[in-house]
Image (cartoon, rainbow, N blue to C red):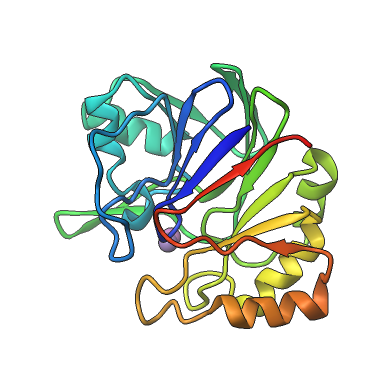
Amino acid sequence: MNEITYFGHSAFQIVTSKGLHIWIDPWLDNPKAPKKTGPTQADVILLTHAHGDHLGNAIAIARSSSAEVVAIHEIQQYLLGRGVSNVTGMNIGGTYQTKGLTITMVMAVHSSSIQEHGSIIYGGEPAGFVVRLEDGFVLYHAGDTALFNDMSLIGELYKPDVAMLPIGSHYVMGPKEAAYAAKLIGAPKVIPMHYGTFPALSGTVKEFAGEIEKRAPNVVIEAMSPGQTLTLGIS
Ligand code: NI
Ligand code: MN
């Protein structure tokens, strides 16, 4: 079984059944993050896009571990320039296999840039990730995104067992759009993310649950509190 721990915002750690430590968008000092406990173990770090609330602590974690960072080409180039050596660049639509994982980068409708010294650096296109773990369990982390119809293709092609979807609105989908996304994707379980971190991210799990009830009543919402761990695997 695989253990998925939520760190608030869009940050997750997955410890796979084979003991691999995967991080997605590790912003570990976000306002909702649980208190830090010990050093951060990392084998693979996935970055959906370059915004600070997703790049987060990735550079520090990558430097203090031998973790392989996987991100779009432009973020790879940026990180190499920042002295992070183990970075694999890829692009949307492609699949990359590493350490027993099958990682597919999929589209997201958003923007992506790094703000540094008063200027904006292009961060490539924003993305989501579909990750097939060693045991065949498939997760989809949508990154920051609007609702888009091709989410149904992601569902059809990769058949995710769980989908992490933003519900906060303002910068990303709100509860209504996210519930429609859940319908298109068809994953049996959905973990809401990217809400409540700041007042602007006003979408709530309660609203999301109401919309899911209308749009995709068979979908189970796994609302995780920061620090909570969920055990998921192929049944
Ligand atoms: Ni963003
Ligand atoms: Mn964001």
